[in-house]
Image (cartoon, rainbow, N blue to C red; front, side, top):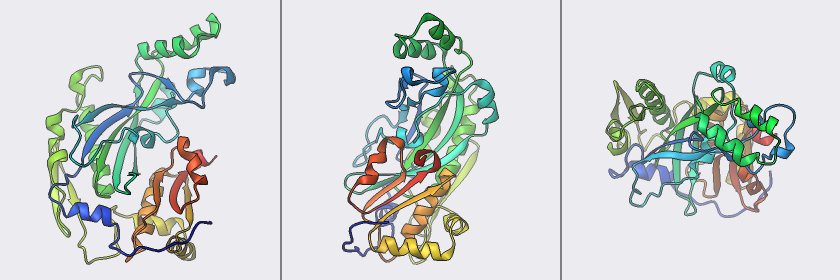
Length: 338
């Protein structure tokens, strides 16, 4: 690792996040959103029909995700909704699969990430990802848009996949505090509530604003406090650790995850590099491990706090930031690194 050494700024650990917890104005989640490609398949810049190998282009290509729905619709005072959340839900872009692959991956996956604004404020996100059938009309429109130069046989073969293709979709929550354990539990419950809605094509299938209101209006508890958030037929426990029990995080078992992945000497090396404001790049096969490990390393800096570039799971489209001549703490998963 290399970087530019500078002044380490003393301050409370996780200051931006912990101060948010002390404010009654900060809700459990600032925003709820749904991310995917069910409305339009927008081809990624790295995918070109002329570069495809044998087989279906639609199954080889990557597509750009977008925010399909968000609540509340209006901007929260002082907290702007970031549409860039879509690329962090799907850091490698969206890939379509057939029905058999979707069935083999029927269990939804929960991941977490951190959004850092230009003013160094952070928003902490969690999302749950699963596969949904892709509307036939979306597939037909994509073939007409991205394969106009291909011959009729190839286009007909791609259109024949309509009704068979599935695309990943995500429910995402954004909070001002790194309460990942609670956010992950909320995402799982929201997914269950969505499934109970019935037909995906029906508007009744969507989560209503009334059902999300407790999540978007219940304030974060004070230090050492707890609040229960009613979601459907369950209550999600949100706990903020006491301020005098430091270093700590609010992400549950992340210290355990860190030391399961790395030995003590490696953790000490990483800790020293961060104190010296170096460039640190973390890599893991499991996406959720990356955010938890980075949160633990930041907490171990107490009584200092990390003031530099901090990116959760680096999307493939932001790889150029690794060339920046500034200190950073970045996590990257195996697929992006490859």
